[in-house]
Image (cartoon, helix red, strand yellow):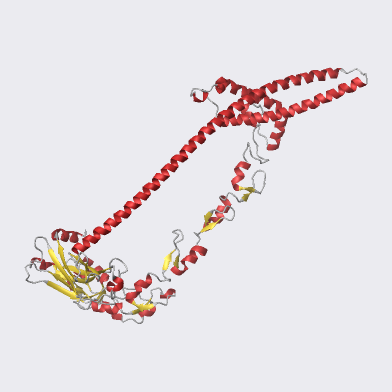
Length: 557
């Protein structure tokens, strides 16, 4: 990454020597060249040297990688500079040392963030994000005032115009304007709808009514009233065909289990029942008309006898008509009785089927309850097992630490399989690894080492880099912070001729030595601890094993 961002007001106050000549920002991980003495950001000089030696941006001097070193002094000075927040232009008044700015940026209310709705993408400050999501974002969820569904605000109008089932719309046929959109389909249904302008054929045409033309609702009602007898006869013929099809199977107890019988479906039985009910209603109306006609004839006969006048021939004709109607009525009543038997039998079968369905439903519910109970038991056992595994893992880790940990501030670190680990570091597979943890005392600081066998930073590819790591411990609340103890690294010569030794005192202002908020702090140490070329000149590696000693001064603890 290039250098640190500077606000306009900070740039006017910063020494120009602290600006990187390549990225023109405040130096970040400052390095200095031996050839010309100019300073660059570490990332910037790595970019310059990525394709071999290159010229200095300022004076054209050739820069070699081995002539670049980290300038820790200027880095400490830069970290101590008092700067404004990078969001100063957006209204943030924070101002403090640079080393504290990164922590502030993580919680700064003036940081520009993208709206959480991907379709929106608007940049707003973190402080304004909640208001944006609740009031101004076009992709927030809104409640439809008609159906109360959750709809994206940007498409509420489209939802009202094309989708909402409760918005009142106008029927294109009859021009009614008070019909909910969700009921429009049933309103204009040709057979069962109530739209006066929809045309449809006679509903009795399905069983043989000869009227084939389509009619509006009013005309269909008139047609039904005028053709009651014909429709009843068609219904009767249809029912007789059904009786012929079903035969005596309905009355046989094993007919339900006979797979060869072509039984009518439930919907067909319901449709026939509706038509029979309609026919019975028509029959009652016809019977009422016939009764009124008989009463009229009786009145005429009684009136004629009282006056001793001869009854005209029309009385005989009326009597014959009455007898014919009575005969037809008796026939219709007989047919109706047969149909009622059929309906009763069908209802009985329907009730049997419903009882079977109810039994199966109860069995299914019982099975679901059993499955849910077993699943809850399984989850409970899995949870208990997981807790035991965690406890066992913690115990194993504790035992391991007790076996290998030191509590006197000294760690002797044995690194086996050195050749393989070195190859892994060179190939990029595992560039670094940690030592076992150790302590300054039983209740003291918890620490470990981190080593790069192929180097890191300015030592990459040329040196072994070793770093010191402060870890989060159980007794940190009782310790003094920041960590201030002197740290010494030793690469042991196994012939005891020439050990490699380096030491440093922690910078109390560095975040690496503050009380850990995570498992480990950022490592700090020596990126150029030991040149790789020295490994073959002494017995630093023998039997594919290296020994590192880390000593923490505990005299003032």
